[in-house]
Length: 107
Image (spheres, rainbow, N blue to C red):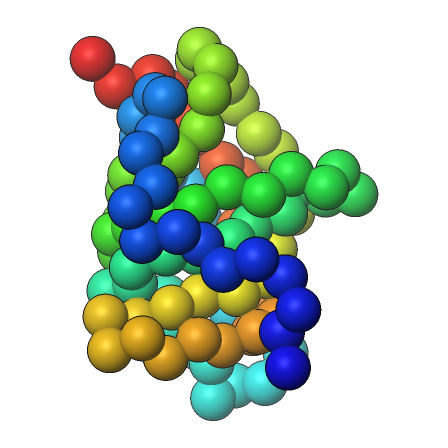
């Protein structure tokens, strides 16, 4: 059982950023379709840093992410810790990574 605090459904971001990158599935091939699915919320980690962000959108395209800060460029790998679809299904450590990520502040 996951002992971490769940992502609050009413979470309001301080700032919205747009995030784009090359998404590649690694590990078990059954998770490859994740890069083409719509997801509600995702927890990510960047390299060895313990940085969690939440995202919504299509992982194969731009992600509307919840990050604070100004224009940033992140060079991967960025690993998905868990993701949740609209029906509430949560998957942990699915082995999907982003090789290169561009984050910019939305206006």
